[in-house]
Amino acid sequence: MRAGTPRRLGGAQEEVAEPGETCPLGAACVVIQDMLALKYGVQIDEADFMTKARARCDPADRSSPARLAAALNTEPALRIKDEANDRLLQLELQVAVVTSFAELRAHVRRFPGSACAVAAVAESGTRRPQVVAVYREAYGETASLVAKTRSQLYGGVAPLMDFREDGFRGAVVLDPVLVRVLKYESQPNMMLDLQVPALSSEYRRGAEGGNDAEADIATRACTALSELAPAPGEMWLRPGGAEAACAFCVGLMSQQLANRSLQVAACRALAGLLPAVTVDASEGQAAVELLAAAMRRHSQCPDVLEAACWALAGSMAMRQDLQAVASSNGASEEVVASMRRFLGAGSEVEDLQTWACGALASLSASNPTQQAAIAGSRGIDAILTAMRLHVDNVRLQHMACGALSNLAANNLNNQAAIAAGGGIDVILQAMQSHPDETTVLQSAIAALWCLVKNNPEHRTLVTRARGVEYIVNAVQSHPYDAELKAMASGALQVLVPGLGEALAGGVQSQRQAPDGAWGSPPRTPSPPLESPSSPEAASAVGFVAAQSAAPSGLSARGPGGAAAALPGMQAKAAASAPSPASPPGASSVPISARGPRSAAWSLETTDDDDDDDSFGGAIAQPPGM
View: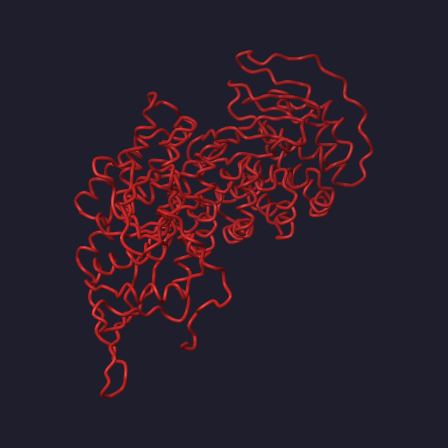
């Protein structure tokens, strides 16, 4: 055996093939053959390919398209004889993982009639998913795709297989690149490098997204739709309108997957449409799949990544149906990867980092699976890095603190990771740098609250870092912001021992609304304040005592419907209270945007320590988007 051949001696044994079972290596060969013919006008020797592919791929690798492609790309370089056995073609496979049926269909539409993807498909009558070469849509319909197959039993051409979304199990798009063309010459006894054929114009048109005029019209249509779509929080579309508009965007995105401008325009339109889509609507789920696909396809384009993050930020919070689709399509991993890829200066990078933080806040709201996935992909490090690099960016600090809140909520592992990464100091730095920005102060206090809940060690760290002082100063600087006061009251209850009873006496007064909408319950005498054990505690207790007599004191249902954080209190956010404040034990409800550079945390409160602490991404609509 030639040295370096990656044959795995003692590897997994070949399983006995079942009748009707397809050959994964044969499927890969079909895709490579079709794409080489389309791109360069060359063909490989199938027998030579199958021999070398078996040496590289264990039977376990062949059941998964992704593992199969990775095994074929292992060193040494893959060199296959051409059809005439006259030249050696050195290949490198460019691999794109596909996680949804809609994304696979989009790739197939680029090169109809040429197999471009290896897919795993659940087929009735077989106990394992079948690996096939997908090459076109079914005639007369778009809900099915058609694949070429090779028989596992005898290796020859097998009947075509069609499948729908319910049978799709995963796929990879294979794009073989012809790196070298070699020819052996016996006279000088050496290998000669020949000219690599040029790419065909047909392949170029498919790779670039097709007809320029059609792409331009589609881009303008999505741009117009983004201008007409409701702003986050608005619901003026007629029933079914959001679903129809989403389906239109999804169709254009799938047809023009390579078109960068169209993907940006469509993502911006979906940012306004997705929040209005009804729960479990297939159009919304397909839209999320295409958002993740756009991020994978345009991973080096910050404008596409930013627009996709913006759409995710405004639509995921408290939408378990959309969060589940985002999770299965790797959306959170793509968001974190984009943050780590673009770390420089400039407004474009800052916008991307800002909306990526907003997307992570929305994805992780009340979702333990996403909390773990984001932390596992080093998302916490990415958020803290963004906050350190862009200290002066108000919106980024606001959304990053919101992301840290949701990641820390009821998750001791994430709480520890945030603290270990210096998160407490970073959050306090945000408060210190933006003392006049109530949105930053509110989300920073929320983050501290989630970090210290049920965590005595973190309470000590926050207190030593003068966190209590920062919170008190924030509220004293903004005495008429009821939401900020309610958030501060809840955090201080946890941070300062014995403060709960003092707060109970200070929050019973209720501000009379101008139109008399808010009633005034009887005042309850305040209990004696406990002796403070530290200067910070003394300051906090003094703050509470002063607020009990302030004109806009903490209220059980104050201006804007702010719900005070009292132990044992079940304060549910009423429809007339669009932006209640949030204590620990809160679960977020859909975001209510307040226009450019302003936003509100929309939450409801509960005293159950086992409930979610999510603070739902506070999303602000950026100027000019």
